[in-house]
Length: 263
Picture: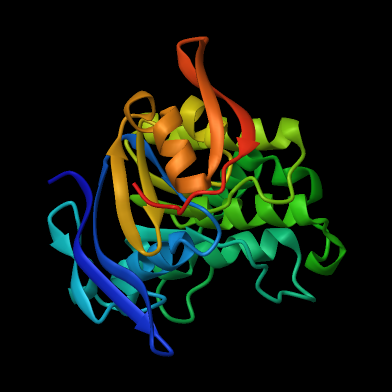
């Protein structure tokens, strides 16, 4: 299979079952949006795929390879994870942070090559982080940190890009710019998986949608198939109308509904 597939992925922590037999597919050359209410398990799923967390059961395959059989270095060459939290990087400039994305491709103690420098420069430009590339990380706003993190991920030249709330801290223009970039990366052949809160962002930019609630996949398919009034009400407990706008579903939210969040 070209892209990512998980089979019966199971993970618990502190006696709590967080991922309960999760099966998902994320095709190559497509944006897959992982949706669900707070605490649904979206971030955990991305961290399991990236290898930050270890599943107790199940398999994770990308382009036919079981990811957990790869070395840490091989995984870092294949997968980039952009998390919500900002890793402490005081004392480093944005350019130096992005240069860290080249580490999996370099030999031990080797200096950066001209190709490395070119890839870093292109990653900074593509995310708009070149405007503050020489600033110390401690001076950045939340949105600037998000862009620096994404630039570092692009510098890894991954085949699988995982983004946890990539629009967090961004203003509307920056949100749409970042989502359009993910769309372009997928069009270039990358497998892109993004955990999103905004259902209309998913409806506009994603090819494939996976809805998770209580650690279980409730429904998956195209945005038009998945993001129905029934699904929105059952999972997010909000009434909704769906209209078409520019060829995509547009969700108009109504009132909160006092129902159990199940499908």
